[in-house]
Image (cartoon, rainbow over all chains, first blue to last red; front, side, top):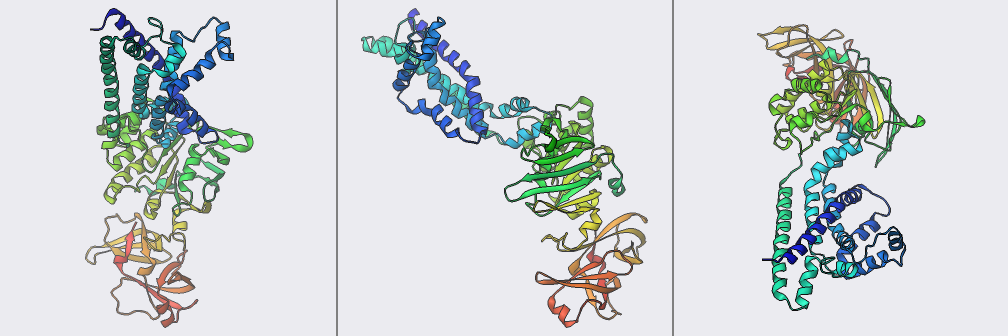
Length: 226
Length: 365
């Protein structure tokens, strides 16, 4: 069984992943919807930028984040002036996992929104719904399975993020150490038995998340448009 | 059939003066629709559906002016462009467009202006009580159309736009949905614009026909006037039709015929129909079902023989179309013959002829 300290790591990781997912949800849904509906210049650039963290080495993303958030740069300095330190704190863990998980949510959401027949939205408008009402009463209810699948994927990604996190948040036990970082740390310091306990926990969490995704997408394919 | 109700005046008038750029051409419609029921007809791709979408506010590039019953929906010169949700237009697309995540009842009650009593009345008129809990995927084509129609009605529309509501249905289903449409027309005081390819439907329901061709208004007027004019009813399936409105004059049960007085001193015999004497009926006779004789045919099985005079001879595709003045009727009849027959009989303008039609070639629309 995991020790008290190990439970601490597990809880911290779940908290970070949950918070990252909750914060990402409105942004990811908004960007996914915009990409699904917008037709015009600049769309390709935005799409590529959003998906970039998927293909880059996570450590490279981490370095870029570190640069942006360090006090020597505008954003980091601006935050520091307001007493907000990001680098090497739990906030850095949050930022790193959000950036890495973002593309997974956006891509799922976008595909789900593209599947919604825009004529149904038009009909909702003729029936008296404003643009926002039509989104919440027609578009989102028809796309929710894809959005949920993307959310679960993003959550799983946030649970296991390593490369970007280690660069921007370090690996500080009790402060920024997540499950993935602790497994690496234990292995490096010869505590393979401890690492295996944590691996068992991650496997359980990942299995639950992925199984949910599979279950959701299976149900989604069964749905047909009337 | 309530034909008269279609001509009853409505206080609602639809003014149209719009330009809508489409992929192939610019849809340009100018006109005032004043009938309770206007059929929009024309070949595929002539802009019928786009016109409905323009009225509904779903064509953001439409320019010009649209007013329904004095309420301005669009006036680009005054920068007025009401969004769809403020137009109060009930739109039923060809495939019904039901929301698949809601039940039939949820669809009917969806509209923001769908107050309880309106929803109840719509459910009642369209006979949907038993279907309310069903999912749209489990409904038949006709049931979906009825649900979509009820959904549009329940949202308190100023005008109803129906895009071929019967086209996707087979003949049996068509006949079951048609009475519902007539009920809506007669009991709900909402003008209806109705896209259709079917001449019979237009004649049965509409008080006015708007004909579109490549985005332009080809004609606007009473269905009988338009639809029996040469060239307007020239769809491949049905061919040219002569349409005549008449009154049932008598039934001859022994002879197996009903006589219909079509005006101009003409009486046409048709196979017995179950319509009371005095009823108004519309008769259709295909142009190719009319036999032409240059002498009075003395011994002939055809029950209808009329003296006529050829007004014009026109080559139409592989055939020749004659326009013949018959009796004192207001419109010429169209007769289709092969060029060989026209040559052999030396038919030309002014030739006196006799037109013979078998009773069974006359159809009641």
